[in-house]
Length: 309
Image (cartoon, rainbow, N blue to C red):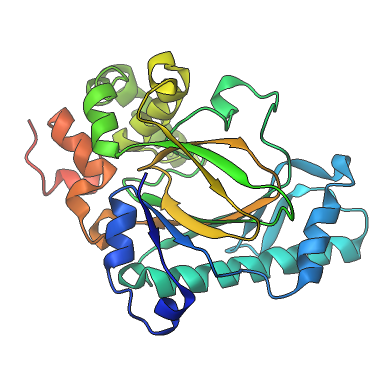
C-alpha cells in the first residue's frame, strides 16, 4: 500500500496543498514520521497509567468535543476524571489543528466527530466477529450515520516499545466492484431495507432516538460485516502488512481503505466526517462508486442531482 509521507517542514511551509487530500481519497495512508501530538510526557504517562486500573476502562475511551465529555472510563477520583478530560480535549484540539493544516481543502467543511483512546492490546482480544479489529473491514458507524460523508481519521500510538501493526487492502473501487453486489447493494433500494428507514423516520417523529440512516449508511454497515465474515477477502493475496512505530502519526479514510489491527496497544485517534462535495475528487468517494454500481442514488440529497435508474 502506498504511503504518502509528509515532513514537518512541508506542513510549516504550507506547501502541501491538495496533494494530501488526493492521496487520502485514493486510499493511501498519509504518514507524518517526524510529528508528535503530545508536547508533555506527563500526559502520555497519565494515559499509560490508566491501564493499571483495568476496571476503570471499557473497550475505548471516547472524547466527544461537542459536549466536552469523556465516556468509557470510570475514574477513581474527581481529579483523575478532570485530568482525563483535559488530556483528551488537548489531544483532540491538536489533532484537529494538524488535520486542518495537512488537509487544507477540507478545513471548515467537515463535521467533527469523536476522539478516542484505545488502551488494550489488540492481538488475541476475545470479541464477537462484528467487533473484532483484527479482521479487515471498512468503517461504518451504527449510531452516527455519515449520510455519504467520508470517515477521515488521524491516528497516533503512544506505546513506548511496540509497533502498531495493520493489515490493509484496497482501493475501494476494486473492493466494491468485486463484493458490493454480493453484500446486498441492490437490496437497499426497496423491500425490507426501505421499510426499516421508513420505520426509523416514524420513530424519530415520535421522539424516539433512532439513527437517521440513508440507503448508503445501511449498505456500509452491512459491507463492514460482510467483509469481516468473508474468508475469501480475509485471505486476499493483495493485502499488505505495515507497522507504525511509537509516537508516529498517520491518517487515512477508514471507509476507503480496508484495514485491520493485528497487534498494538495504547493508540489514540480523532475522526472527522468529510462531505462528498468537499473532496478533491468526489467521483471516487465510496458513495459515488457505489451509486455507479447500483445505478441509483443512495442518499436523498444526491438523488436530486443524479439520474435514477
